[in-house]
Image (cartoon, rainbow, N blue to C red; front, side, top):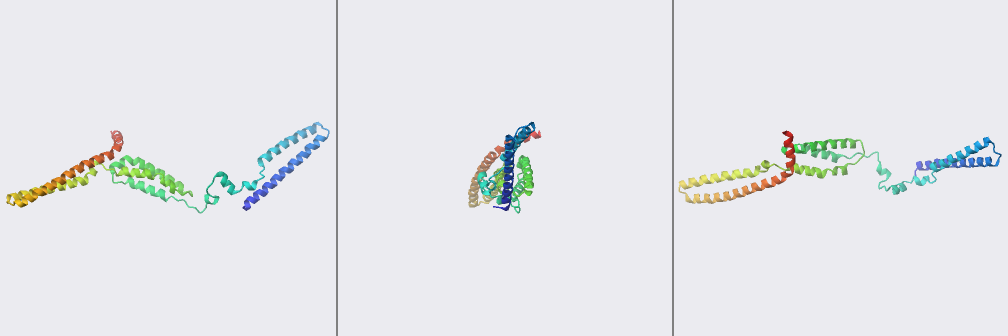
Length: 256
């Protein structure tokens, strides 16, 4: 038990004794008035004594704490309030705020704002700016506190992941860049093969011409696969971009 608790209990005990003494003195005074001959002045004194008794009773009921020592028991307070942390754990002057995860979230949003997919950034600029503004306010409050924001920083993680996934969705032109390069290379190889075959035929080199014919057939088969892959990429990209069609329509109307 702390010295502060003992001192509070001592003061409360003195206060209780003073109230008890005042009640006894008032009771004796009332009894004396009842046994003497009553004059008008005595009746007024008796009424005043009764009023004083009511005041004392109210003071006793409101101000007396007979079990002060138990009331200041921290363990009982924790049980009654369902506390899980001790008073010392709830407040430590040396504790520093933990907000590095909040700064990491700000960095992620700033990187998304500089995303390579410029056509998609337009759709989410407002969302990113709003998020940065709110995180800056949170950081400002945390710097003035002793709070640990580790758990708080986990709240928007899923939203940021979805936002990043949306930003990574390409338009059809960007998605087809690699495929079209391969198709162009394949067409150039086919033309080169035709050129070699024609020269071989004009020179009477039938074996070379026949070899180039088989090479051309293989190149054409690969070309067909690349064209099929092109249509597959177009379909997948269209599906990925379908969720943004409404955004595009709103933006289109806004600029009209």
